Amino acid sequence: MELFINQVLAGISTGAIYACMALAVVMIYQAIDHLNFAQGEMAMFSTFIAYQLLQWGIPYWWTFPLTLIISFAGGIAIERALFKPLGNAPVLVHVAGFIALFAILNSVAGLTWDWTIKQFPTPFGNAPFLGSQLISTHQAGMIGITFILLILLFVFFRFTRVGLAMRAAAALPESAKLVGINVSWMIALGWGMASGIGAIAGILIAPVVFLEPNMMGGVLVYGFASAVLGGLTSPFGAVMGGFLVGVFENLVGTYIPGVGNELKLPIALALIITVLVLRPGGLFGRTFVQRV
Amino acid sequence: MTTAHETAPAATASKKAAAAAAPSMNIARVASLITLALLLLVPLFLKNFYIFQMTQWLIYAIALLALNILTGGSGQFSLGQSAFYAVGAYTAAVMMEILGVNYALTLPVAGLICFVFGFLFGLPALRLSGVYLALATFALAVAMPQVLKLHFFESWTGGVQGLVIIKPDPPEFLKTIGLKVSQDMWLYYFTLVVGIGIYIASVNLLASRSGRAMMAIRDNQIAASAMGIDVPLYKTLAFGISAGITGVAGALGAIAVAFVAPDSYTIQLAIALFLGMVIGGVGWLPGSLAGAAFIVFVPNIAESISKGLSGAIFGIILIVIIFLVPHGARQVAYMAQHLIGKIGKSS
Image (cartoon, rainbow over all chains, first blue to last red; front, top):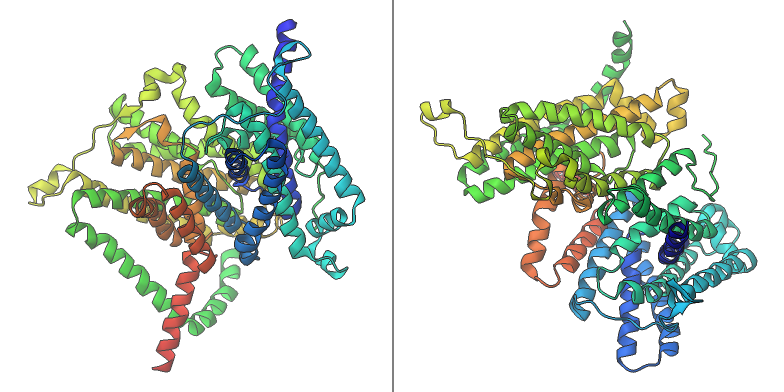
């Protein structure tokens, strides 16, 4: 039983990483109705920007908001420069664009900051949290920040005019235009916010997985899986999905014999797909009824 | 009776269309004949290494054709093609090296096994669409190399090391009539023949009743089912056929490279195939050749421009292509057709 509880706790602490990423994934899905395959690389790039600012001697608590602002602007710039001109091109072309963005960011980061693994500081420290060896203060801080973000997002989408306008623009672009919402800029704003949340995720994850251009490879897959599992329409679902996937993965590794690190991912994905086959909209998502 | 009923109005309609589009039809036909002639003749003047690259190119084109049938034909998205490719490749390798079967015989078996595999995978995938289907197929692609590495199958698959295959020699009768054909050249023409056969079959498939059913599902699933199309059957069938053809491509790939290993069939292969389809033009079968050229040659070009920034250059080339021609090679072909048509009229 103790083993079980320990593994669940360890799962929750890795799940926090996935939850962060999943939140960013859902954010952009809300804004543009696609999964952004370059999301992880954007977060990685933002983290490198934070790293660079720290290298220049800017204190941590200045770096954090600065990185957020730069990432926000960067997200909007990417949308304006790359994806707005693509406009009405088919969905699959947009996906190809994401892959291109992925390749570019990865390669440029590798060349600028080189491919070696770097340490990234944490503001929370790495002492055991409440005497538990499994969750460090950093991971606890991460879980806390994830939930704060979630609440902020909820408030933003629920109670502000801009949030409402963004939801309208994503759900029914034509009708939103008719009531005077600038749909095009709402999408740009969505990109900016997703990029900003990605930056937060990157800065929180980097102390755990270490900073390098490929740091997001594995995390993004789990982030997608978590977002899809929780339901792409629900930020709350995404966060819950993240924790579930983290716990899932750990329990599978512990209790099913012969499952090494290699098979963890396929089995986690297989379980997620099983869930999806039973509940196609995800655990917390809404299913849309299609009409002719 | 029903066929006569169906074709009669269609025939008059197509005659009208043919009369209107006569020059463009000819252009398309001329273009395909030129392509065929080039495919037949060019290897005669190339070194073995380049012939090998052309074989690779044809093999990817076959795999793209398969993806085009699935995505362009039935509207289902797949990031898991690398898994079917891997199954095809391993089927060929195991049959040749462990069972000692002739290489040509491995192709139909690889196709059949992958067809069954794809069909079965298509069943649960029926409940999923869009992003969810993408994730499911993605999971398949991620899982496949790990499954191939499993200790349990090691006596068959060779585990992490993979299997080395002996490259087949050209048949004896070519020597007796005095033709000197290298292994690479023989494999090239072998692949070409298989590819042309698959291409003709695919064109006919998409033009057939089943093909139209698939396209109806792609355009509007609910309307299609209201018209009495068996949606689950055709969707899984599309998955099966696509997987089967990908399997044949995989088997050819294994024979041409003479080596299979789990890490040759990662998610990167699936992504490359996806990009190739977009570059070629979704749903346009001849575009597969253009898409395959992109897969084989653009990474090399990017690498030759700059080693350190090859990823960025690859991405920029990709972006430039999708900006200029969002519908890929298909759009280029249409533009060329219009241009030639105009020149033809004005002269």
